[in-house]
Each structure stands twice: as C-alpha cells, then as structure tokens.
Amino acid sequence: MKTAVFPGTFDPFTVGHANIVERALPLFDRIVIGVGVNDEKTPAEQAEERAAAIRKLYAGEPRISVVTYDDLTVDLCSREGAAFILRGVRSMKDFEYERDVAALNKRLSGIETILLFSEETLAHISSSAVRELLKYGKDVSEFLPQ
Image (cartoon, rainbow, N blue to C red; front, side, top):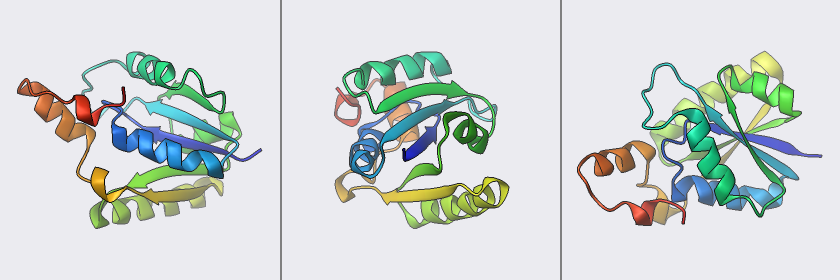
C-alpha cells in the first residue's frame, strides 16, 4: 500500500491544501494529513480543532485520515507506514525550502518527498494571508473548502 503523509500546520486548511490532496489521491492508496504542532507558531486554533475540521471535510473519503503530531514528520511517517511525504509548492521560494527539507528527511529516514505544484489560480493563497484577512474582518470563504 502506497501511503503518503501530507504535513502542515493548516492554520487554516485552505482550498490550496485541498487541491493538493485531491490531485494526490490518484497517486496513493492512502493519504494521512498530519496536523503539526509547531512551537514557533501561534495558531488561531489548537491542533485537534484544526484536525477535526479537516476530518469533517474528508468524512466521506476512506483513503484519507487526519492525525495530529508534535514530533518530526519522518517519525509520523514511520508510525503511519508512509514511504512518502507530500508537499505543495507555490513559488521558487517554497521550492528551495522544500528541496532542503526533503534532502534532510531522505538522509534521516530514506523517505521520499513528492512535490506537487500549486494550480496557478491557487498559488496566491496561503494560510498566513487568510489569517491576515480574517484579522481585518474580511470574507475569506472563497479561500476555504466548503
């Protein structure tokens, strides 16, 4: 069984994230969305609240599971039996960062990272931009999955 972990803080989980998951489903038998706890970030909601919202979104898709974690992504992969890490890339800046992290993860664990490039129409959407819009009371419904 080909399993991938799609890690992130997902604060919030955007239509860009959902698009990566949907496009990756044909590539894997199972995708584990790993909602990470990052001590360097102050999320609007706790990890379990974010995970619950994502679980609700994918309640009808048995190939997707959602977990929270507070250790290394490669350790989550090991627990879940995943041979792949799935990541989305919106820009060259993202690519360079993800390339370096992928090399480190490969060295630590042998786990391959699969990068999917964002759809052009979604590349401008980020969780931080959505949080900023929310801070100023703007409607962000078009940036969040229904």
